[in-house]
Image 1 (cartoon, one colour):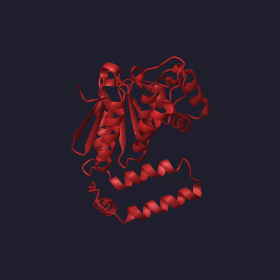
Image 2: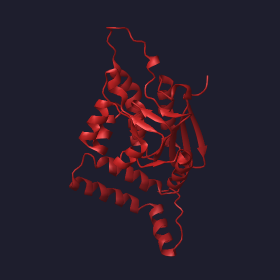
Image 3: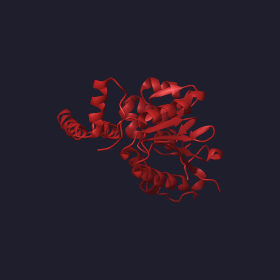
Image 4: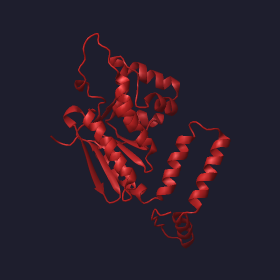
Length: 262
């Protein structure tokens, strides 16, 4: 049996590939278990400074593999239990990851697959890709943080329409609406994702982690609270060697070399 998730390393970049192409990389228990294990490992690996998440084959992720669930007509199913144990911990791990996650959406991203992609930090999508909030088609509401991400990024009107109508959203429109960072030509997706991750891997890690944390905090803080959080972050960053290196490099008119040390 092949691995449901493949982990590769390219210097300081880790590439995480969903690997069930025959099922459009839909999630089964083995996939979500592997992702949780891999993300926990990468969060603690000092040699990894940026991640890429993508899918094998012609799709990114078609969401939950419904063939894994045996349904009995009239019998209740606790879908929330799988969220508690499989999907919610995964999304929380991605949000808490101190390293930037670049998501390269190479085809359809539907249901939980779409919202898994949106849990990353910088999302690139091939122009042929589509995002589909497919939940209502099977009698469910969006999960994996979808109602939070869609509302925050697009506003109520678009969030409700996407969730209620389950219409495909093209990569180019997703970029125009601000749901993702950029739509790129299909052949350029992985080269651009790799170049972006390599660039992030050379940036100061503590500053990237602080940027991610502060932007997440801004969803629930007041301006006064955010000013204090920014002050605290800058105080900590100002004591790092990377800050000293950045200032020195600026003065010496050379590219900085950020070692990622405190």
